[in-house]
Image (tube, rainbow, N blue to C red):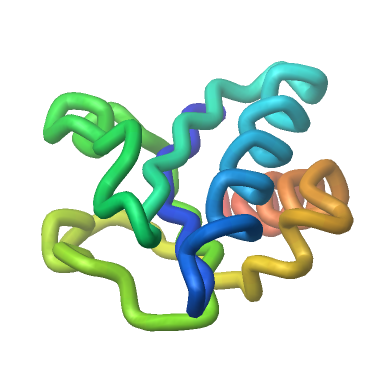
Length: 105
């Protein structure tokens, strides 16, 4: 499954990159293509391209605040989770999301 998304915490310093890296690493382990954009104190890091959004199966928003430019995901299945869940259990989060998506097919 191809997943793109955004991580963003209130301060935008620690949890934002930690969650992005955890999700990408867990995705690779589970055989999924996961690409996360970080929105934090440094602005947007690893910004997702229009082509990546278009080819994605779903969008994962792992945030404790409103993310910028969310309208670019219009028409895509969006899953929202708290960022802390991704830091502590990224693999479990992805498994649950993929399982739910497969049931919808």
